[in-house]
Image 1: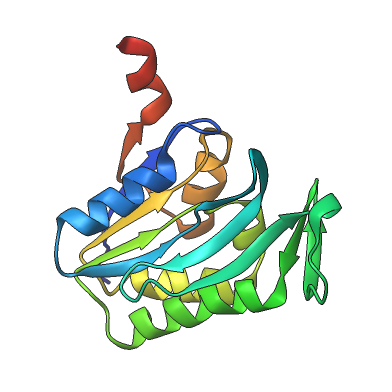
Image 2 (image 1 turned 90 degrees about the vertical axis):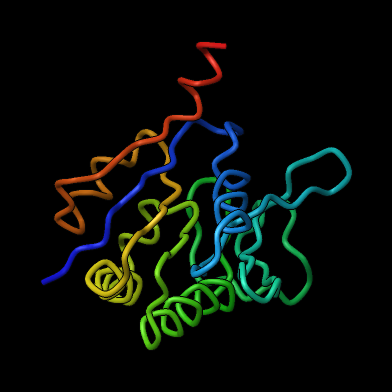
Length: 168
């Protein structure tokens, strides 16, 4: 079975993982995927959206429990966030489209415990790992072991944005 080259983009909170995923996608052709940009209400962080990199279409993904908009379609909660069923389905639909026509490169942002706990996400992402050339995955530092174990990834590169900031 062919295996994609896996590139993990990591760092702590606010280290620039999402910006790096978006920049990598914008700088190279032949790829697609999603990013999870932060949403702000004024100066306050209110949650995250899902952004399809090729189309620019956005969908609400997570909102702080104390900032839920009217009609919010909560699928689950974890910590201080409520996750939208429509947002999670949007991620799945992006991955389904990529699995149907695998691009050379796949970009996936903010992969964590929530995603790894969803059977549909795991199945789609595993299919992409075996069908595309490269995967760029945004993963928080404290979730890397969980990510590589979930997919049996043994060969991967890591770009640690926190480490680069500390060296400068």
